[in-house]
Length: 465
Ligand code: ADP
Image (cartoon, rainbow, N blue to C red):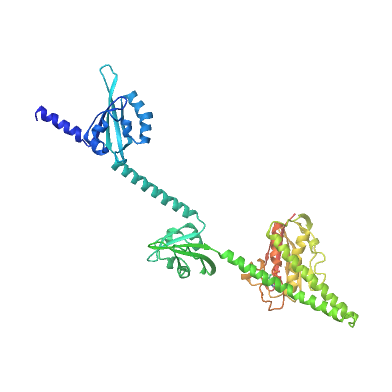
């Protein structure tokens, strides 16, 4: 290559380099620019040279950055490198670029010009944006996983083949299995009662879901689940909530209404009958008959008041409204005069068992146990005290039918009765033992059943004084 060829080659390289070149005066006025800049920006060189400043080629944000940051830096250190900028194009578009610039000085060191290069950064910007989007996606997924881990409702994703793809901790708790052992397994095999859950119709995306409450048998217990199902594209997502407790509560409420109305009706019928008879035949009734009817009135009114008291006390015990007033007493003092109305009650009044108790409340508990024993058996009822290591024990035992081992916890539940239909003819609210247990709890004691050969034997342990 001769020197003119070399010159032409260098010129071609300058003009069509993959980099845009601009030379400016120190104030930014364009002196020279290559063809690449023309191509990229769409501005003719005649529109640039002497007519525009470099700053005019920059987007507003980039311009401010240039003035406040790049220009001072250039003055101070003579060059800046690879600063992300945006060029404004003739058609109003933008081109992301990386800008580098060098200050040109005269032999005295006085700055006379600036040489600036721009490298097209659109590829790189696109790549950075994709990277950012991928990171945001990954973060969003991670956040959804965290959220799913914390929601109260169970969420299960089942693929088209019926296999569990996802199971959050709440679903694990509801179904009694860990995500690790469930993933990948057929839902029908891993989850008890799955057919009932899978039968819930899919929600349509526009109308939202219908929630179905389905009963599921698990480990011999009945569990009620509120289930919503939605199409998830290549599978179905089920949202599941355990509503067994709500269901029990509803049942309980229905029981309360049934029991209370039934319990109140019998004495009310008695009161009504006695009162109407008295009213209608007052004059021609013999004195004893009148007295008998009045006694019925008093007895039935007393029974009614008792039932209402029991219901009120039970509801106060549900809140925190009842405190025990503890004092040191001899257990025998609590038993004094017990069962005065019945020759069947045999009380062992030996003293010497000192306890810390609320006498009135404890008396109420033992009264209730004795009443039950009289109600449910026909033989003798024994009440005895016993000193134990840390407590004093009162035992109320009878020779009646006793209580089957499987029912010995449940009889302390509210409204629970072994004979709810009162086939034996013995009525009751099913609140007595619930109240007894609550009261004993408040004294720091325990109430339960002893394993006895025949009949029922209830014990009440109260902390020793
Ligand atoms: P109730 O008002 O029905 O007597 P309780 O709460 O006092 O309610 O007792 C609950 C149930 O426990 C009774 O309905 C009865 O079935 C059973 N029960 C209680 N005490 C005895 C007993 N001494 N012998 C047999 N069954 C009993």
